[in-house]
Image (cartoon, rainbow, N blue to C red; front, top):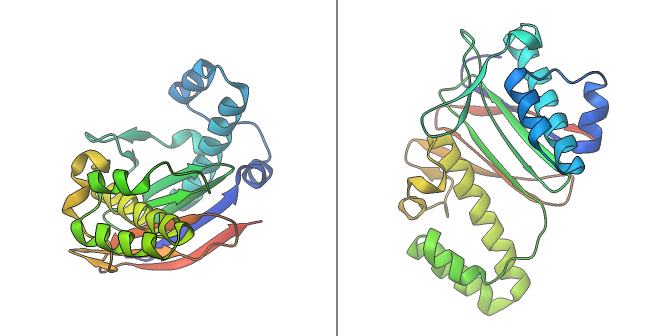
Length: 216
């Protein structure tokens, strides 16, 4: 992977489990966390997600999975502490997950499976800019479907950007307008998916998506 390149990996949890096809490769902290998850389905999702993430990162970093050190920074964003390791970010919702692996300074992704949104206009007043709210209101005037589709589009774009910044929504969601792709030093791109759902990636202006891998 050359400097500035970003790879995207999308899979259903079922396909990701088939892809890793072996024993979980979690570290001690991850195994402890998995044990603490009472719900069996949630525990299985966590193990599959972390195993697939570690399998991919090990290939990119050219090390064994047990040599990876996944940590979190001061804002709680997962980072890889290995020397010369790629940046990464992941998002999971419903029965699918999206992982970005990048030779960049940072990257952020967000994927949202279809779900009911209670009063999106009220939520938008808390986290969307005035311009985003105005666009959402125009969509709402057209139809509920148009409103909900635009809300999720803005939400994933904003979430991916805030994850790339490393702050999450605590970092001031209304400070960044994602109506356009260019947002300061970042480019925010909505993704076309072969599965139901909405997703976006945020990457530095100097970076580009090299490839998107779909496990179907």
